[in-house]
Length: 384
Ligand SMILES: Cc1cc2nc3c(=O)[nH]c(=O)nc-3n(C[C@H](O)[C@H](O)[C@H](O)COP(=O)(O)OP(=O)(O)OC[C@H]3O[C@@H](n4cnc5c(N)ncnc54)[C@H](O)[C@@H]3O)c2cc1C
Image (cartoon, rainbow, N blue to C red; front, side, top):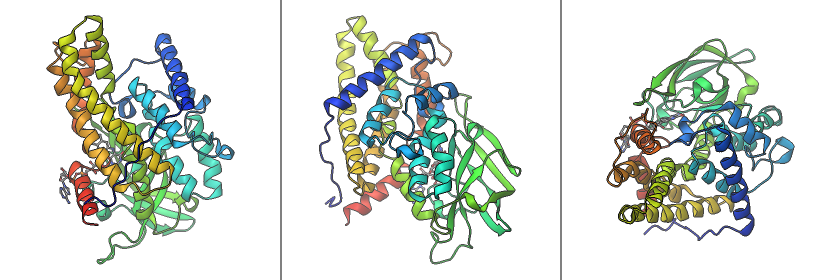
């Protein structure tokens, strides 16, 4: 029995719906101005400094942070509404994504006063971008066996090692890097890990792109060779990095981005079927839309639990497992409805979005924890 699973029904208020309309009208206006073309997986691939700055000016980055650090003190449900709309419109939000979603909240919880004053206002303005430095060549699912090592020196650390699959590192200012600050103990792999803020332009840091199937560069290998990290770049307590990183992952797993990566394709096909009065096609789209509605309700429930300060570990794993399989299947199912040959370079929007969906989707069930790992978490929860 899943004793730990709670999914209370979350409902959105009139104010939430008004806010949604405000976001929509801003996005419609931006599309009209030509500031972006909707794309699939825009939280990973849609990079625009100008667009991030515009969102920053509107108070739509770091919006849950306290006002004294540049935030708006809005709720995580309001943020949820904003994110849903940004993703549904395929808006270019990749530049600030990680800083907004996880580094900001993490620094708020564990950062020193000086780190909060230094980084949070810039994050909220869309002027400071972070990438996530967790995975290493031999430490992905088994993250605690990572080897990147920081050695204490006068005034800080010397960092040596490498990270892999680091999304957006080539476009970010900093990487929040999980590394070993003490030798690994045989009986406790999780001890002796710490989180350091690494300036990606510092001497001793180099970045090498890894190409997607589409040929685009979204993620990277990042190498550290005696990179000096000042001591005030330690986040939280030395040795507490594992606990902190696991909390960071809680912000990652159940958000709308685990369901909506391919939504712009669904919307485009829906509009096309409607315009052409294609009711047969519409019938085939119905199961996709109903699955989406159920997943969205589950994801919203997890957002409500997070807002209430509840433990969402198992619920978030279920939403991510089901949500990422759904968003991955969308392209295959839609190919059976529309008669379009996928093409990255087509002027036909549906052909382009199907192609983007196919080329991006292999990563959906890997990033943020693989399906098998999530199912391990769920299985352990069933035994409680
Ligand atoms: C698009 C994308 C973006 C990413 N961005 C980032 C990023 O910004 N920063 C970052 O740090 N990382 C990032 N990652 C890395 C991601 O977190 C890892 O790919 C993931 O954790 C899996 O690790 P791995 O690739 O080393 O695979 P492995 O851990 O080697 O796993 C390989 C296969 O074995 C299975 N497996 C492994 N262990 C077990 C087990 N115990 N039981 C059952 N099956 C198991 C896995 O499920 C998987 O199918 C990104 C990945 C992708 C695809």
